[in-house]
Length: 233
Image (cartoon, rainbow, N blue to C red; front, side, top):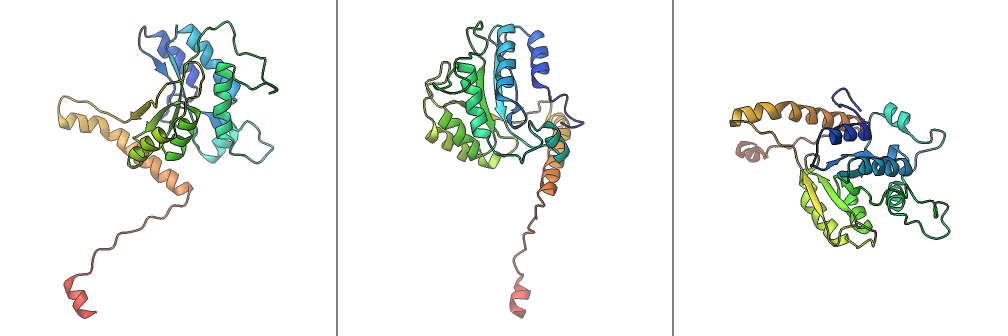
């Protein structure tokens, strides 16, 4: 949610993109699950899937915005926020595939039983922590290479090692890993560089803003001492 974002209402943009296309798959990247009800997310994208004849993917993840926006988006504002992200992801899957165990309060309440199939769920992340969660839940995993390229190899390896078959309908039979990156294409190198420059500047600004909120400290690499200074020492 910023001046540079077209909209944070994923289901609206996904519906529009699907209405303007005929064959390509259209997905969200990413529904910030820490700001929404798992039931609402599963319901909205199942409806989109039915309306678009099976071309919808549901990409879920989590992220933080400015403190004021995070508070505005909180599901419950009277309590201290809790980190229940893993439980939320599992609940989305349970709603999609009617997989609540016997005795669960939501068992016996299938989501849109008139829709025969479900959108393809993806877990999107930029760390090995999200890779572990995706693997253990048997989900497809999309890694945000543009956000954290140095962790991509470790995340892919972790995901493959942690992958378990979920047994849910439509879940992959083997680890399915997608690497995302920013690409600019121009007729010449100079044109490509020009097209890429605004995005590079924007992500540099995002990193500075994020670092400022966390009070990051940047270490300055010291140059090795010169021969003259070593002689004085």
